[in-house]
Amino acid sequence: MSGRIKVKYLITGSGGLLGSAFSRVMADRGMEYKSLEKSDLDVTDRYATRHCIHVESPDVLFHCAAFTNVDMAESERSTAFAVNADGSKNVAKACKQVGARMVYFSTDYVFDGTKRSPYSTHDQPNPLSAYGESKLTGENAVVASGVDVLLIRTSWLYGTVGKNFVRTVIQRAREGRALQLIDDQTGSPTWAEHIAELTLDLVSHHASGTYHITNSGEATWYDLGREALSISGLHSEIEPISTEAWAAPARRPYYSVLDASKVEVFLGRKMTPWREALKEFIKGMDR
Ligand SMILES: NC(=O)c1ccc[n+]([C@@H]2O[C@H](COP(=O)([O-])OP(=O)(O)OC[C@H]3O[C@@H](n4cnc5c(N)ncnc54)[C@H](OP(=O)(O)O)[C@@H]3O)[C@@H](O)[C@H]2O)c1
Image (cartoon, rainbow, N blue to C red; front, side, top):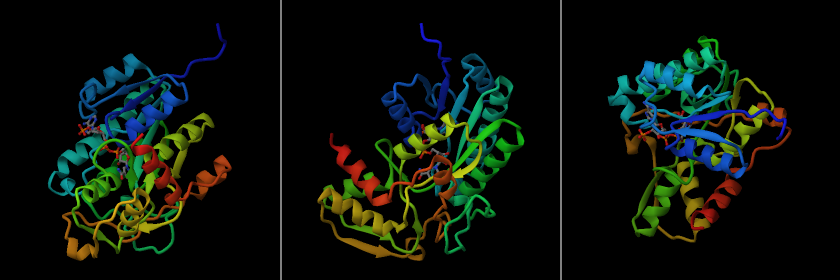
């Protein structure tokens, strides 16, 4: 029998893009974990959340459950807040009661995009959208609960599961459809698996507080779409379009690159450039 103490890991929202990336990376690392899909635990149900977290009694909980449809959050504001703010508070309180560490994921959309240099963890959030507001309210509620929290802001995620920009662009190009891609919003595209990897490394080094984690470098949606098609060997007509012409219901920051230097210093390694990460992801897609 090994003398190592087993750490119990729990994932909420495990059916989503980031939650499923955690499951894959933890399985690859031979870690034991329990994943909870929305049908297993609805975090807006305070009693169910408390009961579930008490029964599971994890050491670390990765809170990946969230309402993430940025445009829909404008018309379904109360649902976005119920999940992202109140639901996160339910999880935080239950984690505090059982002495679990909570990892809360947040977004570049807590910033207003008026800066022209990467946002550090010291910059003041000022969300432009209901989604951004609900995520920031969630951040504040989790911190106020007094739980031992690792708060990670990330941006422009793509990965194997769910509807995400990179998969959608490739799918449309394969169907021979023309594309219109926004060319005046700048951010850092990030592979969800890299977030899972780096978060697990932070947790194993007992990091707490707020960190920004993204792949490095910056791009517009147009740059990202072009690169994804070029790596995939696909050709499709891409028309650059402005934010104004696209006219989405939710306002988004024009510039939301996050400064990941704090995590680079803490872990002693550089973030992977977004083009490299994208190439690795796309090469693995058809495997
Ligand atoms: N995707 C991005 O570009 C991005 C960027 C920055 C930050 N983030 C943050 O990263 C985290 C993970 O996002 P993601 O991209 O993985 O989102 P996602 O793919 O939409 O996954 C979220 C998961 O949460 C589930 N969920 C929704 N409401 C729930 C509830 N009341 N109780 C329990 N589960 C619920 C969803 O289930 P259903 O699908 O069945 O509703 C889904 O499986 C979020 O905190 C998000 O704000 C994401």
